[in-house]
Length: 477
Ligand SMILES: Cc1cc2nc3c(=O)[nH]c(=O)nc-3n(C[C@H](O)[C@H](O)[C@H](O)COP(=O)(O)OP(=O)(O)OC[C@H]3O[C@@H](n4cnc5c(N)ncnc54)[C@H](O)[C@@H]3O)c2cc1C
Image (cartoon, rainbow, N blue to C red; front, top):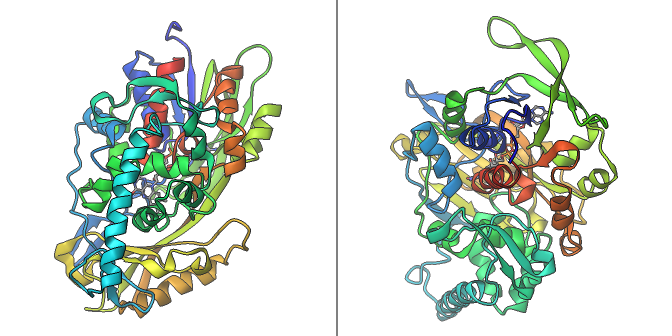
């Protein structure tokens, strides 16, 4: 192991960067710096406070929830001395006409066909749980190393040995490179897509004909999926951002905010030169438009920010150029809305018909956070605007359409408080996955002192990004 005196640069103060620093610190490293472009840590965990009826509370524009399978996030909670103490998740279902529907309740809107459909889903769910634990043994690890070659190697997600390193051989794992719809058809479990659809597609992770099954099943492993179905979910009173703010406060070296990494040079002397641009703020904390740049010297670099964008400011080598230019991401749009007086939702809703590629740009889900605020609670509304092989629907059209969809559901938007499109769920295509993209990335870890972490390593959620940081620090530091 290294002498732990090395100077380490972490790019990005999102869940991956903050957790990488925590794991480094736990292993005895003290000489690290985190650079974060924004004026806060947490990245896509952004939980602004909004005042309603004279009281300020947290709302979510990014990550909302976890589950009991969030083992790495739980390590962060313990480090920070906080817990998942947020409001209970509640939901209902609607069709695109805004009518309430009961797709999974056999008693409501009873027909023989519906009952038969539900029986089929239940038996296919059982089959999926069985084959994932047998035929696809080793699927539920963080990360994708070896999968395309029929191996597994990484930290386990299984409860009794969570976050322990396991490895083995299983040729069937190669099937995980298939698009999820093909994977389901191949295994005769196509009806389970109806269950996986809401927590997958409506949460912005793409459509089942374009995303390798590996991503779907590593995020919604059968235990986590069951927790979603039963709504046994974790939330945080002060928002998911508070996890990373609390950890950051306990770090020996909290993140440098308003500081963007603009250049990386890794010459043959073995050092890494990182140029950062610090944005100057006025007395109200607003950027003045002025900035200063300086260059720092490091021994190692952990990149937790989008790797395809890393190519724009780093002295990328041939392998980095080739691998990172293959990365795709989703265009996930969301806003927080206030609704007309007494006309807002009182519970979260999934709009099932809108979760198809043809309906991209339409609202798929909305999140009602505070039950006691009833119809005056501002809600977050979400849509995807891209699908493989189709033209993206325009951003402005998406925002208008999402508002129209809420009105159709009976909730006319009065005001949008925040709106954004995020670089979401970076992934590679089924073909690139099958061709061993992840094994080539893994083989490149450590070249010129550089390590890659963040969403692409395993999956675009808090747990997988934090666990990937644990894995990288555990293996290489
Ligand atoms: C709408 C939405 C809903 C979500 N819901 C959930 C959920 O319910 N549960 C869940 O687990 N996850 C959810 N997620 C996903 C989760 O938020 C992300 O997977 C997680 O934040 C990824 O962490 P990261 O650190 O890899 O990247 P990010 O969170 O994107 O953080 C990267 C950071 O790097 C900074 N940065 C980028 N470039 C530079 C640079 N050159 N220099 C310095 N800093 C830079 C960025 O400002 C950012 O802060 C959701 C995300 C969104 C957007």
